[in-house]
Image (cartoon, rainbow, N blue to C red; front, side, top):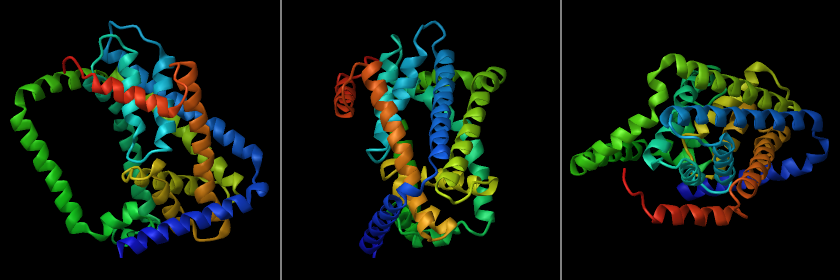
Length: 323
């Protein structure tokens, strides 16, 4: 049954991709280009927020914002090629190498502070989507033609067991590695420094993330217009809700399968919706891949995503001298 669901999801994706290419000539290009520009600003503001968290964690260090932005863009681009957030390792390595005395745990914690505000937005947005009657209810998620979400929703007992197993493994790891874990926690707390100063967090990070979400919403509003779905506040929030839910299942590049299946479920299975479900992902992937490649070559002197991944693996293989 799982294999059939996965096969159906792949078939639906390619059908939707076919509709996108059929309707390519009918796109409204001005809204599309403005949408891409808005999304680029969204990414720029998020990178600036991450930079603020890193400055708070390393107050005595001097490092360039463009390298933080470049690492973020390279990771974003690779995440549209590789599943399971493969680009995040590259972001961690490139950012850490840009700060002379940094450690991986501190850099990782500083980057993760961005999820605090994102969660505060995503939870009510996804909750609103479930109240509108068009978002599949949790029991119906198993019927979605995307393996990522369908498998976990259809096998709730296994999902709960897997989550419990992770919790047990975490506790055992803490007990067995208590001394190193204490060192790790010290570096993690350093990375979370900006959260300990509410005024600074609100002024230097949360305000930027709020602005970034406004640009992200504007981007999807305009993408809805570009694909002739019709942009409005409700539809934009529904798209953002789909994005938030898809982020929980990072098993495909950019959460492509989940997004496409949920967008069709939310907006209906018309040819226009099918084209939008794939087309907006293709457009944003092309944008972020282009920006990511430019960042790798112009900022870090790396000539390809493959070379960047080799660089990340080599850096991690050398090991961290101390947690």
